[in-house]
Length: 391
Image (tube, rainbow, N blue to C red):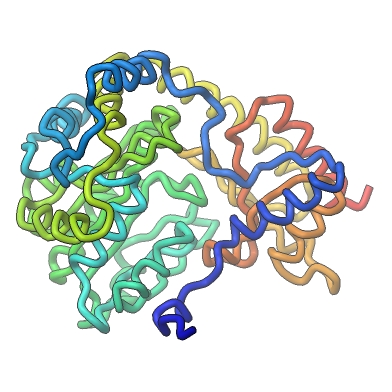
C-alpha cells in the first residue's frame, strides 16, 4: 500500500499521545488527573440541549445547505453586531464542523503551493500542519514570555518576505492565554494589509477574557476591509459544545463561496439539528458564559499562585482562554532534557497529564489547562510541584 507523501509532512498529535499514555496508566489501575484537555468542564446549557431535542422532534434531520441554514448564518452575523457593533450579512457567514474545519477550509482556499504563512509561536498545534496540507510554508514568529507571548509589528516585519500571503492571529491564545488589546490587534492587521497579507483572526476564545482586560476583535477591521481578513468563531469553548462540532467563518462573500466549494466536496453540511441548537445559543441568554468566565478567572489565579511558588518557574499572567504556559526548563535534567520527557515523568510519577510545549513550538514550556474543578486543579498542581521539587 502506498500512502500519500503529503502525510509525511504531518506530525502525530502530541495531545493524543499524552492521552494514550494516560489511558494506559488508567488501565493499570492508576488514578490520573488530566490537565491536558482544552475542554470546559461545564455542561452544555439546558436551553441549547432542549433546542436540539425540539429540532429532532420537528424532523430537522435532513441535509441542509452546505454553508448552513439561513437562520444560523443570520444569527452569527447579528452576533457581531450584538457584541461588537459590527455590521455583517448572512452572505458573510459559512458554518463548518468546528473551528478546526473553518481554518482548514480557509488555508485550502487561500494558499497556493509555496505561499508562506506567518504563525506566531507558541501556536495552536494544528496551524502548521494545516498550512502544510494546503501546500503552504509555515514561517514561525517567536513571541517571548517576557512580552506575554505577544507580538509587535516589528516582529512581523522581521519575518516578512514577498512570499508571505497569510498571517494568522489567535487572541486569546491556545496555548498561552495571551490576549491582544484592541489597538495592538488592529495595528497588526493594518501592517498585514499594508503588505498585501491576508489576516485570519482566530477568535474562538473571544468571550473568555478576564477583567480588567477587555475583549478585542478584528470584526471592525473586517467591516472596513473584508477583502483582507476573515474571522473564525465557534461555540465549543463559550457554550461548552466541544462535541457538537460547530464553528464559522466571517468572510468576504467570494471567500465564503470558495470555502463552500471545498466543504461541499468534503463534509457537506454541519449536523442539521445542531445548527438549530446553535441558533438558540447565539440568540438566547449568555449567563452561562458569565458564570464560566468567573470560575476560570478564579482557577487561573489559584494555579498561578501555585506555579509561581516553584523556584525557577516563569509564568506570564494570561488574560483569556483557560491555559497557563509556564517556562519550566529550569527543571530539565539528563533524564528529562525537554518538555516531552518532563511531561512523561510528571505523568508517571504524579499521575497528572500535561501537554509538552514542543507541540506548540516552545520546548521550554508545558501547557496546563485549568478547565477542571478547583480542588482537582489544586491537587494536580501540588502533585506536579512535588515531582519538580523532588519532594
